[in-house]
Amino acid sequence: MPAPVFVLNGPNLNLLGTREPGVYGTTTLAMIENDCVAHAGKLKLAIDFRQTNHEGELVDWIQEASRVASGIVINPGAYTHTSVALHDALKAGGKPVVEVHLSNIFAREPFRHHSYVSPVAAGIISGFGPHGYLLALEAIHRLIPE
Image (tube, one colour):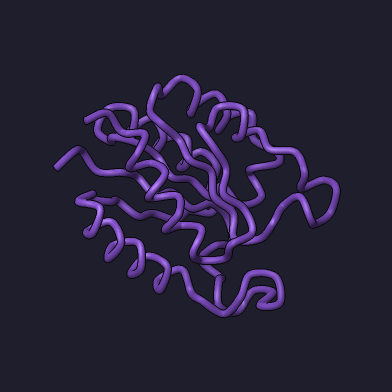
């Protein structure tokens, strides 16, 4: 089995299930994690699933992933639209990256249409709700060298 895939989640994703259910649904982050663990098992992937509200901690985890992970699935939350630090860390890390968002960021407010992560990601999955994480795992599985 390859090194684990880091599944990293940014700010406010710990509030899933109660935060703006009309936008993000009622599925909790713990439920998404359970689904990811089950799906990763089918793909013969190990995952390390994490969430933080702190940008610096995400940067630290990305740097850690560059040493010990086979790839990164990241939902940077609001940092998608603001963080050059995440962009730089992902670019420096040299691991395959798939960006995922629960909502379609391009169908929302104009400030959400720009991503600092997308230029350093192999691809973006946006707008499929919690299922987007499973699609992201399938994508990262295809990107990891055998």
